Image 1: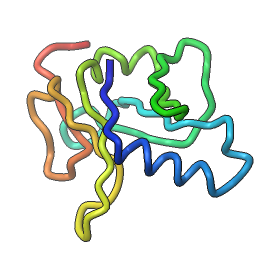
Image 2 (image 1 turned 30 degrees about the horizontal axis):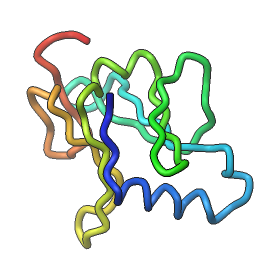
Image 3 (image 1 turned 90 degrees about the vertical axis):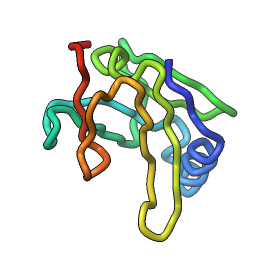
Amino acid sequence: MINITDSAVQQLQSLLSQRAENSRKGLRVQVAKGGCSGLHYEMTLDERKDGDAIVERDGIQFFIDGDSVPYLRGATLDFSDGLTDAGFRVVNPNASRTCGCGSSFETTQSA
């Protein structure tokens, strides 16, 4: 489904460990309509919902809603902490065109 890098797992572990109320949460990665290329990524700390696909690594969970699964199949979630590009990012082979913002994309076929 979606590949998760070690740096993404470590960053989410760090975020969740800062507060006890986050112990049942994971990172929700989803695709929504909008952005300059038609679709964009949204990520939030959340709990599991019915219909979610779950990717678990090292005890950390990543949730993907059913509508987003086709858009994210084969993608990689990474975390970068560079000076100019810090944060989670998706490297998506399904994106036929991306925008300069880095979070907006378009696919050649509808998922």
